[in-house]
Image 1 (cartoon, rainbow, N blue to C red):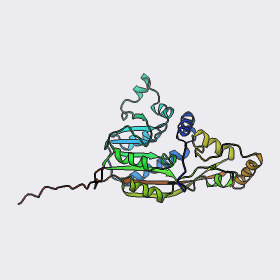
Image 2: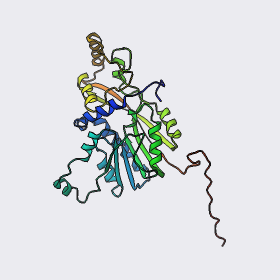
Image 3: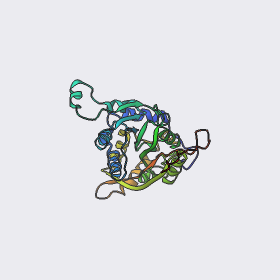
Image 4: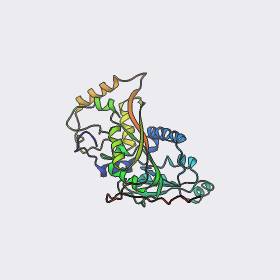
Length: 297
């Protein structure tokens, strides 16, 4: 789904990195929290009362409280491929923590799973919520098909992901060596095509650019590492670029500072889509529905 068919991400490396980042993720997840807030605002204009919600790519579980407040009667489920993230999401399980939870929504049920092979039954979820997870897939189509499978008819997928202009300052400044120092992100139009291929109907998407600022380059790179967001492309350079090249990159980025802060661009794509009554079976046969005749008066 990226520019080249051979674009790929090292899945095991991503799992290790996000596992290591579990202890520091919440400290630096400013972007994820802001995007979640904006996703929640979009729900003000969508009529849906889900019975079961799946937060796919739930990480440390920071979106669970927000979803519980909006849909207090819904069962909540979380899935993530990094077990240490889920352990943070589970939190304390002692007597005191259980007493504090009295009167609150039932804690989410958690599963360590890959987005392309979910351990949930067909049509078991009313809403799939996915905040900044799709950008960690070289090809989102298999995961979108799984989301479609686990959704019930008239269920909704609500998602956010990162677009191609993300970290454009860093991409332009880093040394031009063989390989990709900042991995690529899927274009909104390609994502729309994938949603339709996966079986979703009426996808609605929009894009906005958010800019975070940092005191210097080292702080930006620290945040990327501590959130598990370092480059995992299989084509990334494996060696150092050399002091001269890195000094040039630092100077290039420093020249972008405004009022003493270094900007970092994030192209954020948000959207939702619905699962409607299927027109064909899984093996391609047409589905014909018979409606009873209205009773004669």
